[in-house]
Length: 245
Image: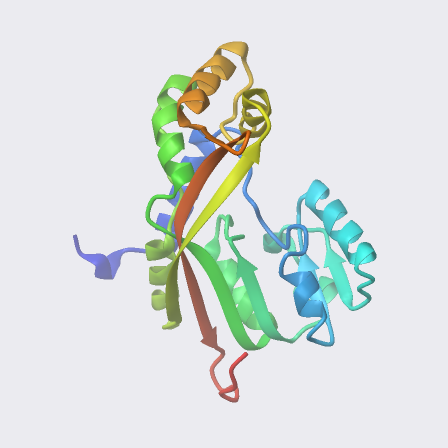
């Protein structure tokens, strides 16, 4: 394959669209979420802007801001792709983060907007290879939905988009494991139904049987273990003083 003539942004778009069609109403964790980064950062810097499109997550974020008494975070309840940098933001920003929130159709345009509002560093976090979520989806999707699961674009596509833009980022790869704990199989099923786009009783029984074979008993609770390989990409905008975060 002649990779020189590949438009990697179109590859990203195609994979995002294929996943969207195949995965029905599966959600993406896009934006600031509940403030896992924004709140700790607000204690170290003068100002933080948090962009979050999801109504539920924005509500949790605002509750957490109030709980911690944070006064230097402003929230933008929009998808990054429709954010107006002049109207909605208070840039330029010393650091721009997008942490596992790159479920954007046109990743090139989204990154360009990050560059436009950054006066220093940009940090992107994403996934490499198959995650445990992908593995379970690959096994379940044909039974649940009658067609193959379509995995979204990974770090290889993202890196090539950046490369085509003349950006050669630093890279750090690290494994990540996590454990989810439930008090019962019923609770686990209810938790995973939206993740696997389960809407019918027949689909629920398929999911229940799958989870029953997957879950482990641990100290009276049942747990499911997950894993992924994660990647941090970061670079300094050209012409900026070479300081590290």
